[in-house]
Length: 85
Image (cartoon, rainbow, N blue to C red):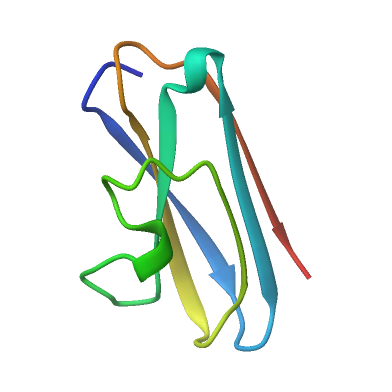
């Protein structure tokens, strides 16, 4: 992924589930943002520009969550892990 580029993943989830998202990249050049279903803005703790690498929380809504991975500095090769319980 090139600098400034974003890739979005859709994750179907239900109210009350716990979601954990983690991104690992060489040189820590990738970060995540997470959006609730039908939301225009990311969840406050994981907004774009905060350089977040890991987030865990209980979901308040059912539907498709958007997990966005973005490059923070140069080319980013990354591994994204998402778990739901």
